[in-house]
Image (cartoon, rainbow, N blue to C red; front, side, top):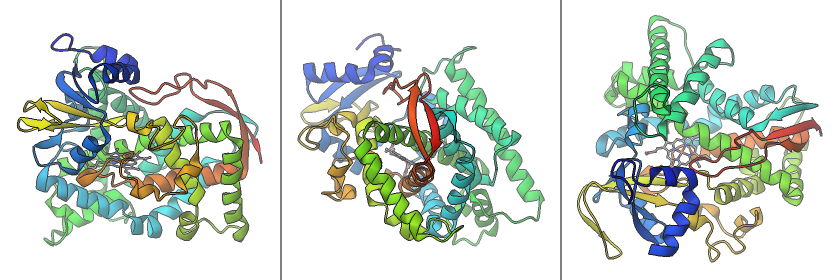
Length: 432
Ligand code: HEM
């Protein structure tokens, strides 16, 4: 298991998927390691993974590493449990549930994409940078009505550092990602506190998540879920919302564009779906909820992207008591890494698994697929799933109906611990 503190962490971070494949071949679907500062059991068993996600509370709690807790905050939703988790989840779902998307968020997303895609013609675009900017700016707009400009730039700069620090060794020394991430958290908190202060000092009305959380809190009518949250909890909740939706949405979008580029027939069919929507519209009329719901092929493309790129490799849990799983004793306090990438490459579940094949999702109802855990499962099933799907679909809508593109460099993709294009995926864009 390597050295007690670092264990196999550097091997794991350097070559995660290979690291797991080799050990799985040697030891089976469940094996021990010592990663990110903790003894850990890694599970690649689909049925066991599903069981673990569905059984939080029964000896299992979230098990995110110290670096993540320090940087995302002790009140971040992925760390809290029991009734506080329910309260925070309720508060969050009130902000991003499908009827909120339909009635409020969708029209903002439309306006945002319309502007985001101006001036792409005849330019080389770093798609990784642009999708990151898209996801983060959209979040800032939804959370606090912040538009692009110097304030948003300053916030984004700090937030990128914060995110980098969440997967790092918790070594608080100058120059480490952890130290930078931790300092970035302090700066992000300062900026968010300032927004809360301004909101309280002003009588202006706003239509965003902070306004909803504060109104609910200040009404204190006892009936509202959020009135139970303190300011510090609200701040960590906001960081959770921005963080959880940022990298997942941006990376899935970038990879969907990449797979569409590499698969002309899929791109043709997807573009046709979006051109058909556009043809139905009068000038100036934007995409509505029914249009979004009709984007069946687009949804299949996104699911296939999530599967084949495995944007979220796995989730972490911790045991609160000794547990036996598949004849394996897992002591109290150990972590379990519920690893999903292997299941996504299972030839039985996904014949010809390495081929990008969005049509495979049309034969079955993607949502009901038991072992597809791209959005997690159980009581922590991603509350932003629909919002994420809407954002990616809308990005694709505006992109493919306005532009064609070719890759001109930076197409190397690393898949672990994050899916990234280290040199930025560059595309040359021209009008469609
Ligand atoms: C393609 C997009 C997305 C993917 C693949 C994704 C994936 C996931 C996964 C796998 C989990 C489970 C984590 C666990 O069990 O520990 C999760 C949880 C979560 N997601 Fe997402 N997510 C996406 C978009 C979003 C968006 C847009 C938001 C918010 C605006 C969001 C907010 C959250 C939150 C707050 C949690 C924690 C839920 C809890 O602990 O109860 N996600 N997501």
